[in-house]
Image (cartoon, rainbow, N blue to C red; front, top):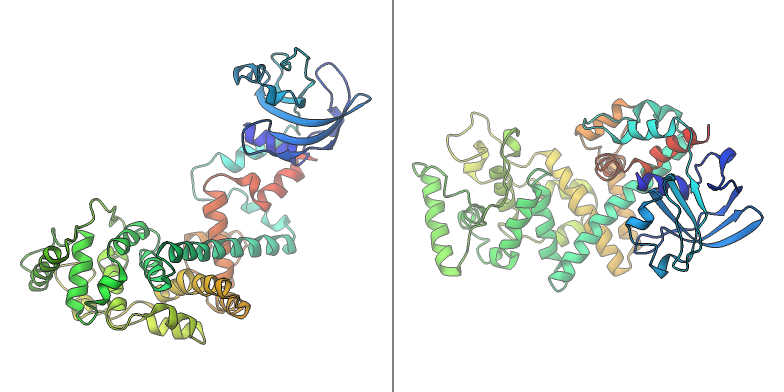
Length: 426
Protein backbone atom coordinates (compact mmCIF):
# COMPACT_ATOMS: atom_id res chain seq x y z
CA UNK A 1 0.00 0.00 0.00
CA UNK A 2 2.82 2.44 0.82
CA UNK A 3 4.35 1.71 -2.60
CA UNK A 4 1.09 2.85 -4.18
CA UNK A 5 1.09 5.96 -2.00
CA UNK A 6 4.64 6.73 -3.15
CA UNK A 7 3.47 6.39 -6.73
CA UNK A 8 0.49 8.70 -6.21
CA UNK A 9 2.65 11.37 -4.52
CA UNK A 10 5.47 11.12 -7.07
CA UNK A 11 3.10 11.52 -10.04
CA UNK A 12 0.81 14.08 -8.38
CA UNK A 13 -2.32 11.96 -8.69
CA UNK A 14 -4.00 13.46 -5.62
CA UNK A 15 -7.36 15.18 -5.80
CA UNK A 16 -6.40 18.84 -6.11
CA UNK A 17 -9.68 20.02 -4.58
CA UNK A 18 -8.86 18.81 -1.08
CA UNK A 19 -5.17 19.28 -0.33
CA UNK A 20 -5.10 20.42 3.28
CA UNK A 21 -3.22 19.55 6.43
CA UNK A 22 -5.01 17.78 9.25
CA UNK A 23 -5.31 21.16 11.02
CA UNK A 24 -6.97 22.77 7.99
CA UNK A 25 -4.13 24.66 6.24
CA UNK A 26 -4.18 24.68 2.42
CA UNK A 27 -1.38 22.72 0.68
CA UNK A 28 0.11 23.37 -2.75
CA UNK A 29 2.67 20.85 -4.05
CA UNK A 30 5.34 22.80 -5.97
CA UNK A 31 7.73 19.84 -6.35
CA UNK A 32 7.08 16.33 -4.93
CA UNK A 33 10.82 15.79 -4.53
CA UNK A 34 13.08 12.91 -5.52
CA UNK A 35 12.14 9.35 -4.54
CA UNK A 36 14.61 7.87 -2.07
CA UNK A 37 15.18 4.10 -2.33
CA UNK A 38 17.67 3.98 0.56
CA UNK A 39 17.40 4.75 4.27
CA UNK A 40 15.88 8.05 5.32
CA UNK A 41 12.77 10.01 4.29
CA UNK A 42 10.83 8.77 1.27
CA UNK A 43 11.24 11.91 -0.88
CA UNK A 44 14.16 14.34 -0.81
CA UNK A 45 14.18 18.03 -1.67
CA UNK A 46 10.45 18.57 -2.00
CA UNK A 47 8.89 22.03 -2.16
CA UNK A 48 5.48 22.42 -0.53
CA UNK A 49 3.47 25.55 0.25
CA UNK A 50 1.53 25.12 3.49
CA UNK A 51 -0.78 28.03 4.21
CA UNK A 52 1.24 31.18 3.46
CA UNK A 53 4.63 29.53 4.01
CA UNK A 54 6.83 27.80 1.41
CA UNK A 55 8.73 24.82 2.80
CA UNK A 56 11.71 23.06 1.22
CA UNK A 57 12.67 19.72 2.72
CA UNK A 58 11.74 16.06 2.78
CA UNK A 59 8.44 14.17 2.73
CA UNK A 60 7.72 10.95 4.60
CA UNK A 61 4.81 8.67 3.70
CA UNK A 62 3.12 6.08 5.93
CA UNK A 63 -0.04 4.05 5.82
CA UNK A 64 -0.85 5.11 9.40
CA UNK A 65 0.42 8.23 11.11
CA UNK A 66 1.32 6.10 14.15
CA UNK A 67 3.87 4.25 11.95
CA UNK A 68 6.12 7.29 12.48
CA UNK A 69 6.54 6.33 16.10
CA UNK A 70 6.49 2.59 15.37
CA UNK A 71 9.40 2.95 12.90
CA UNK A 72 11.49 4.95 15.35
CA UNK A 73 11.44 8.27 13.48
CA UNK A 74 10.54 10.41 16.51
CA UNK A 75 14.02 10.16 18.00
CA UNK A 76 15.91 9.99 14.70
CA UNK A 77 17.57 13.29 13.59
CA UNK A 78 17.58 12.02 9.98
CA UNK A 79 13.84 12.79 9.92
CA UNK A 80 14.07 16.32 11.32
CA UNK A 81 14.21 17.58 7.72
CA UNK A 82 10.67 16.29 7.01
CA UNK A 83 8.35 19.20 6.21
CA UNK A 84 5.22 17.12 5.50
CA UNK A 85 4.00 13.73 6.69
CA UNK A 86 1.58 12.11 4.20
CA UNK A 87 -0.67 9.33 5.51
CA UNK A 88 -3.70 7.27 4.62
CA UNK A 89 -4.97 7.25 8.22
CA UNK A 90 -4.48 10.12 10.66
CA UNK A 91 -4.32 8.31 14.00
CA UNK A 92 -1.52 10.22 15.79
CA UNK A 93 0.46 13.50 15.66
CA UNK A 94 4.15 13.33 14.71
CA UNK A 95 7.07 15.41 15.97
CA UNK A 96 10.74 16.08 15.34
CA UNK A 97 13.43 15.28 17.90
CA UNK A 98 12.99 18.73 19.46
CA UNK A 99 9.24 18.22 19.92
CA UNK A 100 8.06 20.39 16.99
CA UNK A 101 4.88 19.09 15.38
CA UNK A 102 5.28 18.16 11.71
CA UNK A 103 2.45 19.13 9.34
CA UNK A 104 0.43 16.12 8.32
CA UNK A 105 -1.84 15.45 5.34
CA UNK A 106 -4.25 12.60 4.57
CA UNK A 107 -3.79 11.39 1.01
CA UNK A 108 -7.00 11.33 -1.01
CA UNK A 109 -7.45 10.01 -4.54
CA UNK A 110 -10.40 9.55 -6.84
CA UNK A 111 -12.81 7.04 -5.17
CA UNK A 112 -12.34 4.63 -8.08
CA UNK A 113 -8.54 4.77 -8.00
CA UNK A 114 -7.95 2.02 -5.44
CA UNK A 115 -10.47 -0.26 -7.11
CA UNK A 116 -8.74 0.33 -10.40
CA UNK A 117 -5.34 -0.44 -8.95
CA UNK A 118 -6.62 -3.60 -7.24
CA UNK A 119 -8.15 -4.84 -10.49
CA UNK A 120 -4.72 -4.62 -12.11
CA UNK A 121 -2.52 -6.22 -9.46
CA UNK A 122 -4.74 -8.57 -7.43
CA UNK A 123 -4.95 -11.51 -9.79
CA UNK A 124 -3.48 -14.98 -10.20
CA UNK A 125 -4.41 -15.90 -13.76
CA UNK A 126 -2.55 -15.31 -17.00
CA UNK A 127 -5.03 -12.85 -18.49
CA UNK A 128 -3.97 -9.27 -19.10
CA UNK A 129 -6.26 -7.21 -16.82
CA UNK A 130 -5.57 -4.07 -18.85
CA UNK A 131 -6.31 -5.72 -22.22
CA UNK A 132 -9.68 -4.03 -22.64
CA UNK A 133 -8.00 -0.64 -22.28
CA UNK A 134 -5.39 -1.14 -25.00
CA UNK A 135 -7.56 0.43 -27.74
CA UNK A 136 -7.66 3.69 -25.76
CA UNK A 137 -3.86 3.99 -25.73
CA UNK A 138 -2.44 6.09 -28.61
CA UNK A 139 -0.45 4.03 -31.11
CA UNK A 140 2.59 6.28 -30.68
CA UNK A 141 2.61 5.76 -26.90
CA UNK A 142 2.38 1.98 -27.28
CA UNK A 143 5.11 1.89 -29.95
CA UNK A 144 7.40 3.99 -27.78
CA UNK A 145 6.86 1.68 -24.78
CA UNK A 146 7.45 -1.49 -26.83
CA UNK A 147 10.64 -0.05 -28.30
CA UNK A 148 11.96 0.84 -24.86
CA UNK A 149 11.14 -2.61 -23.51
CA UNK A 150 12.79 -4.44 -26.41
CA UNK A 151 15.99 -2.44 -25.97
CA UNK A 152 15.92 -3.02 -22.20
CA UNK A 153 15.57 -6.78 -22.62
CA UNK A 154 18.22 -7.20 -25.30
CA UNK A 155 20.75 -4.98 -23.57
CA UNK A 156 20.24 -6.93 -20.33
CA UNK A 157 21.16 -10.11 -22.21
CA UNK A 158 24.16 -8.39 -23.78
CA UNK A 159 25.32 -7.21 -20.35
CA UNK A 160 25.02 -10.77 -19.06
CA UNK A 161 27.37 -11.95 -21.83
CA UNK A 162 29.82 -9.15 -21.07
CA UNK A 163 29.83 -10.07 -17.38
CA UNK A 164 30.44 -13.73 -18.19
CA UNK A 165 33.29 -12.87 -20.55
CA UNK A 166 34.86 -10.73 -17.82
CA UNK A 167 34.39 -13.57 -15.32
CA UNK A 168 36.30 -15.88 -17.64
CA UNK A 169 39.13 -13.39 -18.26
CA UNK A 170 37.86 -12.14 -21.58
CA UNK A 171 36.99 -15.53 -23.04
CA UNK A 172 33.98 -14.72 -25.23
CA UNK A 173 33.83 -18.30 -26.55
CA UNK A 174 33.33 -19.65 -23.03
CA UNK A 175 30.72 -17.00 -22.25
CA UNK A 176 28.83 -17.73 -25.47
CA UNK A 177 28.93 -21.48 -24.83
CA UNK A 178 27.34 -20.99 -21.39
CA UNK A 179 24.64 -18.63 -22.70
CA UNK A 180 23.95 -20.99 -25.61
CA UNK A 181 23.52 -23.93 -23.23
CA UNK A 182 21.10 -21.83 -21.18
CA UNK A 183 19.16 -20.84 -24.28
CA UNK A 184 18.82 -24.50 -25.26
CA UNK A 185 16.95 -25.01 -21.98
CA UNK A 186 14.22 -22.74 -23.40
CA UNK A 187 13.04 -21.28 -20.12
CA UNK A 188 11.92 -24.43 -18.33
CA UNK A 189 15.37 -26.00 -18.08
CA UNK A 190 17.47 -22.89 -18.62
CA UNK A 191 19.01 -22.92 -15.13
CA UNK A 192 19.97 -26.64 -15.16
CA UNK A 193 21.47 -26.28 -18.65
CA UNK A 194 23.56 -23.34 -17.48
CA UNK A 195 24.72 -25.30 -14.41
CA UNK A 196 25.71 -28.15 -16.70
CA UNK A 197 27.79 -25.86 -18.92
CA UNK A 198 29.45 -24.21 -15.91
CA UNK A 199 30.45 -27.64 -14.60
CA UNK A 200 32.16 -28.51 -17.91
CA UNK A 201 34.46 -25.77 -19.21
CA UNK A 202 34.53 -25.49 -22.98
CA UNK A 203 38.28 -25.98 -23.10
CA UNK A 204 37.79 -29.38 -21.48
CA UNK A 205 35.13 -30.46 -23.97
CA UNK A 206 37.26 -29.29 -26.89
CA UNK A 207 39.89 -31.88 -25.98
CA UNK A 208 37.36 -34.56 -26.88
CA UNK A 209 35.47 -32.74 -29.62
CA UNK A 210 36.50 -35.33 -32.22
CA UNK A 211 34.34 -37.98 -30.48
CA UNK A 212 30.56 -37.55 -30.35
CA UNK A 213 30.35 -40.49 -27.97
CA UNK A 214 32.81 -38.91 -25.55
CA UNK A 215 31.02 -35.54 -25.58
CA UNK A 216 27.58 -37.10 -25.04
CA UNK A 217 28.92 -39.38 -22.30
CA UNK A 218 30.44 -36.43 -20.44
CA UNK A 219 27.39 -34.20 -20.82
CA UNK A 220 24.78 -36.82 -19.92
CA UNK A 221 26.95 -38.15 -17.08
CA UNK A 222 27.42 -34.67 -15.60
CA UNK A 223 23.69 -34.00 -15.98
CA UNK A 224 22.97 -37.05 -13.82
CA UNK A 225 20.90 -38.85 -16.46
CA UNK A 226 23.04 -41.96 -16.92
CA UNK A 227 22.39 -43.40 -13.46
CA UNK A 228 18.70 -43.95 -14.22
CA UNK A 229 19.10 -44.82 -17.91
CA UNK A 230 18.30 -48.44 -18.94
CA UNK A 231 21.40 -50.67 -18.91
CA UNK A 232 19.80 -52.92 -21.51
CA UNK A 233 20.25 -50.17 -24.09
CA UNK A 234 23.66 -50.80 -25.73
CA UNK A 235 24.23 -47.10 -26.38
CA UNK A 236 23.50 -46.25 -22.77
CA UNK A 237 25.89 -48.94 -21.60
CA UNK A 238 28.61 -47.45 -23.81
CA UNK A 239 27.99 -43.94 -22.47
CA UNK A 240 28.22 -45.21 -18.91
CA UNK A 241 31.58 -46.84 -19.61
CA UNK A 242 32.86 -43.69 -21.28
CA UNK A 243 31.70 -41.43 -18.46
CA UNK A 244 33.18 -43.76 -15.83
CA UNK A 245 36.54 -43.44 -17.59
CA UNK A 246 36.46 -39.65 -17.72
CA UNK A 247 35.03 -39.46 -14.22
CA UNK A 248 38.05 -41.27 -12.79
CA UNK A 249 40.56 -39.60 -15.08
CA UNK A 250 39.48 -35.98 -14.49
CA UNK A 251 37.65 -36.20 -11.16
CA UNK A 252 34.25 -35.24 -12.57
CA UNK A 253 31.30 -35.00 -10.22
CA UNK A 254 27.73 -35.24 -11.58
CA UNK A 255 25.47 -32.31 -10.76
CA UNK A 256 23.61 -32.87 -7.52
CA UNK A 257 19.92 -31.95 -7.77
CA UNK A 258 20.33 -29.81 -10.89
CA UNK A 259 16.60 -29.16 -11.00
CA UNK A 260 15.72 -30.79 -14.31
CA UNK A 261 12.04 -30.50 -15.22
CA UNK A 262 10.30 -33.06 -17.39
CA UNK A 263 6.64 -32.98 -16.40
CA UNK A 264 3.93 -31.63 -18.70
CA UNK A 265 6.43 -31.05 -21.48
CA UNK A 266 6.42 -31.73 -25.19
CA UNK A 267 8.77 -34.61 -26.03
CA UNK A 268 10.90 -32.37 -28.26
CA UNK A 269 11.58 -30.10 -25.25
CA UNK A 270 12.81 -32.84 -22.91
CA UNK A 271 16.26 -32.03 -21.52
CA UNK A 272 17.79 -35.22 -22.97
CA UNK A 273 17.26 -33.94 -26.49
CA UNK A 274 18.46 -30.46 -25.57
CA UNK A 275 21.69 -31.93 -24.21
CA UNK A 276 22.06 -33.95 -27.42
CA UNK A 277 21.74 -30.67 -29.36
CA UNK A 278 24.46 -29.08 -27.22
CA UNK A 279 26.67 -32.10 -27.90
CA UNK A 280 26.19 -31.78 -31.66
CA UNK A 281 27.21 -28.11 -31.48
CA UNK A 282 30.30 -28.69 -29.34
CA UNK A 283 31.61 -31.58 -31.46
CA UNK A 284 34.08 -30.58 -34.14
CA UNK A 285 35.44 -27.04 -34.45
CA UNK A 286 33.04 -25.18 -32.16
CA UNK A 287 33.73 -21.45 -32.64
CA UNK A 288 30.40 -19.74 -31.94
CA UNK A 289 31.72 -16.20 -31.69
CA UNK A 290 33.30 -16.10 -35.13
CA UNK A 291 30.39 -18.03 -36.64
CA UNK A 292 27.97 -15.39 -35.36
CA UNK A 293 29.99 -12.22 -35.84
CA UNK A 294 31.08 -13.13 -39.37
CA UNK A 295 27.60 -14.16 -40.52
CA UNK A 296 25.99 -11.87 -43.09
CA UNK A 297 22.42 -12.73 -42.10
CA UNK A 298 20.47 -14.52 -39.36
CA UNK A 299 19.79 -17.31 -41.86
CA UNK A 300 23.48 -18.17 -41.93
CA UNK A 301 23.52 -18.60 -38.15
CA UNK A 302 20.32 -20.65 -38.27
CA UNK A 303 21.88 -22.99 -40.83
CA UNK A 304 25.03 -23.25 -38.70
CA UNK A 305 22.98 -24.25 -35.65
CA UNK A 306 20.94 -26.92 -37.39
CA UNK A 307 23.64 -29.55 -37.32
CA UNK A 308 22.65 -33.23 -37.53
CA UNK A 309 22.26 -34.94 -34.17
CA UNK A 310 24.01 -38.22 -33.51
CA UNK A 311 22.27 -41.26 -35.02
CA UNK A 312 20.87 -42.33 -31.65
CA UNK A 313 19.12 -38.98 -31.00
CA UNK A 314 17.75 -38.59 -34.50
CA UNK A 315 14.96 -40.97 -33.53
CA UNK A 316 14.65 -40.40 -29.78
CA UNK A 317 13.59 -37.78 -27.25
CA UNK A 318 14.98 -39.68 -24.26
CA UNK A 319 16.81 -42.92 -23.54
CA UNK A 320 14.93 -46.05 -24.56
CA UNK A 321 12.98 -47.24 -27.57
CA UNK A 322 13.21 -45.19 -30.79
CA UNK A 323 10.39 -43.03 -32.08
CA UNK A 324 8.83 -44.01 -35.43
CA UNK A 325 9.57 -40.53 -36.75
CA UNK A 326 13.02 -39.08 -37.34
CA UNK A 327 14.09 -35.75 -35.85
CA UNK A 328 17.53 -35.36 -37.34
CA UNK A 329 18.34 -31.84 -36.29
CA UNK A 330 17.35 -28.82 -34.22
CA UNK A 331 14.04 -27.35 -35.39
CA UNK A 332 14.07 -24.05 -37.21
CA UNK A 333 12.01 -22.50 -34.40
CA UNK A 334 14.62 -23.54 -31.83
CA UNK A 335 17.43 -22.20 -34.00
CA UNK A 336 15.65 -18.85 -34.32
CA UNK A 337 15.36 -18.79 -30.52
CA UNK A 338 19.13 -19.21 -30.25
CA UNK A 339 19.69 -16.34 -32.66
CA UNK A 340 17.39 -14.10 -30.62
CA UNK A 341 18.77 -15.05 -27.21
CA UNK A 342 22.45 -15.62 -28.03
CA UNK A 343 23.55 -14.28 -31.42
CA UNK A 344 21.89 -10.86 -31.19
CA UNK A 345 23.04 -10.14 -27.60
CA UNK A 346 26.57 -11.31 -28.52
CA UNK A 347 26.71 -8.91 -31.47
CA UNK A 348 25.54 -6.04 -29.25
CA UNK A 349 27.99 -6.92 -26.45
CA UNK A 350 30.94 -7.23 -28.83
CA UNK A 351 29.84 -4.13 -30.73
CA UNK A 352 29.87 -2.13 -27.48
CA UNK A 353 33.23 -3.57 -26.42
CA UNK A 354 34.85 -2.85 -29.79
CA UNK A 355 33.09 0.45 -30.39
CA UNK A 356 31.51 -1.02 -33.52
CA UNK A 357 28.14 0.72 -33.90
CA UNK A 358 27.51 -0.99 -37.23
CA UNK A 359 27.54 -4.38 -35.50
CA UNK A 360 24.99 -3.19 -32.94
CA UNK A 361 22.77 -1.77 -35.67
CA UNK A 362 22.98 -5.04 -37.60
CA UNK A 363 21.95 -6.99 -34.50
CA UNK A 364 18.72 -5.04 -34.11
CA UNK A 365 18.07 -5.32 -37.84
CA UNK A 366 18.26 -9.09 -37.45
CA UNK A 367 15.57 -8.95 -34.78
CA UNK A 368 13.34 -7.03 -37.14
CA UNK A 369 13.97 -9.60 -39.90
CA UNK A 370 13.11 -12.61 -37.74
CA UNK A 371 9.51 -13.74 -37.14
CA UNK A 372 7.95 -13.16 -33.72
CA UNK A 373 8.21 -15.91 -31.16
CA UNK A 374 5.19 -18.17 -30.94
CA UNK A 375 4.35 -18.59 -27.28
CA UNK A 376 1.59 -17.99 -24.77
CA UNK A 377 2.72 -14.48 -23.88
CA UNK A 378 2.81 -13.24 -27.46
CA UNK A 379 -0.56 -14.88 -28.11
CA UNK A 380 -2.13 -13.17 -25.07
CA UNK A 381 -1.03 -9.75 -26.25
CA UNK A 382 -2.14 -10.61 -29.78
CA UNK A 383 -5.63 -11.46 -28.54
CA UNK A 384 -5.68 -8.08 -26.81
CA UNK A 385 -4.91 -6.33 -30.08
CA UNK A 386 -1.14 -5.86 -29.67
CA UNK A 387 0.27 -7.85 -32.57
CA UNK A 388 3.93 -8.81 -32.76
CA UNK A 389 5.17 -8.25 -36.28
CA UNK A 390 8.74 -9.43 -35.64
CA UNK A 391 11.11 -10.77 -32.97
CA UNK A 392 11.93 -7.24 -31.82
CA UNK A 393 8.30 -6.71 -30.81
CA UNK A 394 7.84 -10.18 -29.30
CA UNK A 395 10.91 -9.62 -27.12
CA UNK A 396 9.31 -6.42 -25.86
CA UNK A 397 6.06 -8.21 -25.03
CA UNK A 398 7.89 -10.98 -23.17
CA UNK A 399 9.84 -8.39 -21.20
CA UNK A 400 6.69 -6.52 -20.20
CA UNK A 401 5.01 -9.73 -19.10
CA UNK A 402 7.99 -11.04 -17.10
CA UNK A 403 9.06 -7.78 -15.50
CA UNK A 404 5.80 -5.88 -15.04
CA UNK A 405 2.72 -8.09 -15.34
CA UNK A 406 3.89 -11.16 -13.41
CA UNK A 407 5.47 -9.28 -10.45
CA UNK A 408 2.40 -6.98 -10.38
CA UNK A 409 4.44 -3.86 -11.10
CA UNK A 410 1.58 -2.26 -13.04
CA UNK A 411 2.25 1.20 -11.64
CA UNK A 412 5.70 1.13 -13.27
CA UNK A 413 4.38 0.02 -16.66
CA UNK A 414 3.57 2.89 -19.00
CA UNK A 415 0.29 1.24 -19.90
CA UNK A 416 -0.71 0.75 -16.27
CA UNK A 417 0.49 4.24 -15.35
CA UNK A 418 -1.56 5.80 -18.13
CA UNK A 419 -4.70 3.95 -17.06
CA UNK A 420 -4.28 4.81 -13.39
CA UNK A 421 -3.29 8.43 -14.02
CA UNK A 422 -6.29 9.07 -16.25
CA UNK A 423 -8.61 7.46 -13.69
CA UNK A 424 -7.10 9.41 -10.79
CA UNK A 425 -7.69 12.76 -12.48
CA UNK A 426 -11.30 12.18 -13.54
